[in-house]
Length: 183
Length: 129
Image 1: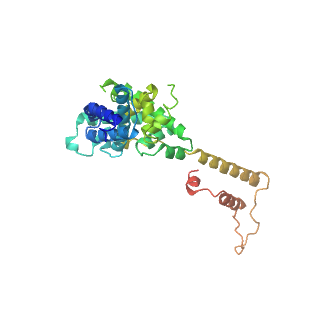
Image 2: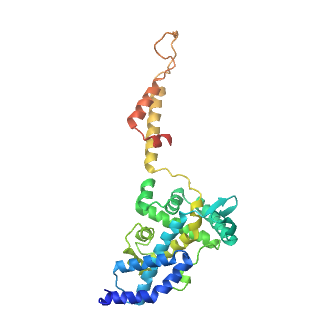
């Protein structure tokens, strides 16, 4: 029981103090899944059984786990097509009549920048990004298919991500950093 | 970037390919936190358009290149042997319609077939050459 164990009691108190802020953080990034993601975060925090000297260390850990789960969430979202490519842009496949024109235009701009940047990369680098994000293949599988080592595949993924970040930043399209928001 | 994990284990961990416990390191490492920040932002920005990305050009595996090189080399050697060191085949002066042999048969064809059978290339490799 948490009440009987001082460490568990301290952890419960820290979770209670950060619960609302975490949900708010997640809601800005995944509005439909914020509560579920928050539950997953706390579950992992409990399982880790880690001790933290300060509240700041605890919060840093919690938001690290949260952002890792957000990346998972984005990958799942990437496998559920909600947009369709059209000549010169994209359109919603869900509810075209209710699609937000600003969101659609933004997605079209992002698609154009990402496709152009991927086309300018070495094919093996662009391929890793595509296979990991659009096909959700593990890095071990990607390495096997490319006939290379896992660390090379990981390096190519990071290289592609860095280049896309630079291109999207230049176009004013990259999402805000969590460091720019309150934590 | 000085942390040795920043561009290896941390990237594997972010995509679910490394153990959850790595989060403890990332939370306390400036380099790894910056990498996590970058991937989270790019993931968030590109998630909705990921299914629409143009498929990159196919990259052949190195093993395929090696096999292709071996086959090309073998074919070059066979051609050199067939045409470089032996006289060109001449059709028989009086080919009979009843002849049991094909007057247009080229011994090189049989040798190439034998070579392909010996190498036993997988079908996809062979057709991609």
